[in-house]
Length: 314
Image (cartoon, rainbow, N blue to C red; front, side, top):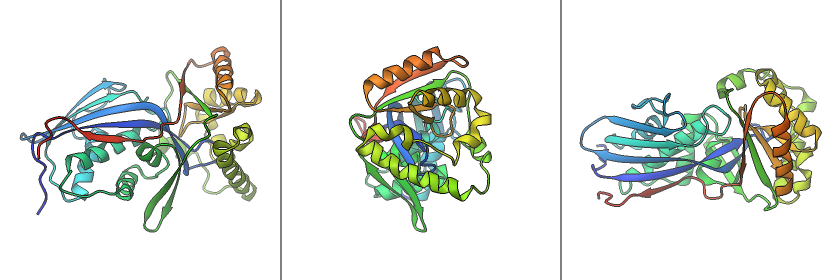
């Protein structure tokens, strides 16, 4: 028999944006950023799901159970043998949609954590189960792991499911995210541009850079420009994001560790100190072509959180 969530339970979930790949760490490395979506979910006696969206995507995102937070929440409850209650969901979005900052991963994580919070006392959900159920929906864990756990994460797949480990970034590393005002890129489209095989030397090149990138982010930020070189995915996607590619080339020519953030078209610049971040932002402001919004961010260390709101029914 399925467990039932009482009416009158409310939880609040906060989920960070994420940036994946970081150059050479394709489908493996991810980082949580200090930019957040906020979701509140309340249960009621009346069946059905109502969604209210504020902020980014308020005019475009669905307001029924097809909304990604709602779909993830229901999927998680069903997987855990919990009946789906009537729900009101209020999503306040700050993470840009389709810009390579983990908006879909954040929505999925929000749904999974809301499900865990609402089902308190009915099911026990471990961190590994959170990672599993969220990755099952997203398809890969590189954005899911940092969204859940914060920090710099390395994620990998095993026959038993996804795994991840969390690392602490050197305090000298400063982050700058440049978001294109208009262009979007779906992860599916970005992946369709990759060849089925890559040259052996390119694989070795990326292995060396990915290993070097961990050393740079943890201990030696001065190595970031070399450590963020990539031959596995960015060049193949360049034709679909010409303005992104042009700006990255301009930044790297000046010695900045600039990479595509996730599937793009946003750009992540990993700076070795705050002064370098200021210089990178100044270069972006004078670069021709697209208009870019720059955000000086830091690494989010907490990851997603869920808490019961006052009056939580038991």
